[in-house]
Length: 95
Picture 1 (cartoon, rainbow, N blue to C red):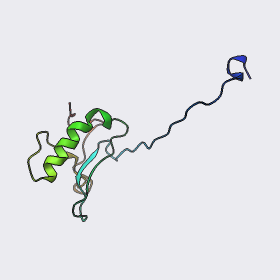
Picture 2 (picture 1 turned 135 degrees about the horizontal axis):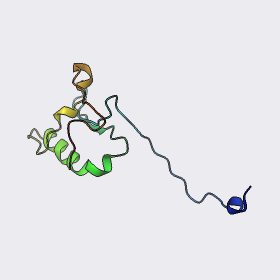
Picture 3 (picture 1 turned 45 degrees about the horizontal axis):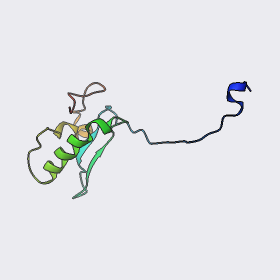
Picture 4 (picture 1 turned 120 degrees about the vertical axis):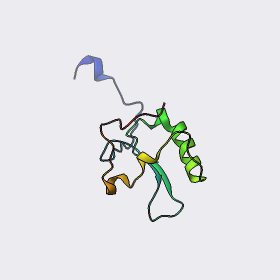
């Protein structure tokens, strides 16, 4: 073993789940067939950048209000209806 790593030891380790929906875009909204269940998943490691806006928009939708930033294109039903988003970054970004 090279001298540069001979005395090295593991100090910290971390792991996390990396989830990617089929069209590489998050799933945001209510879950069909499960009343009162709403999700914001599938951000594949990038959610931390947009989660404040996503949370606000999802909360507005849950309350029956029109979200300030539209999120309906990220609905789970897009996979059944064939309205998946194109490209790894979808139709736009929350910024």
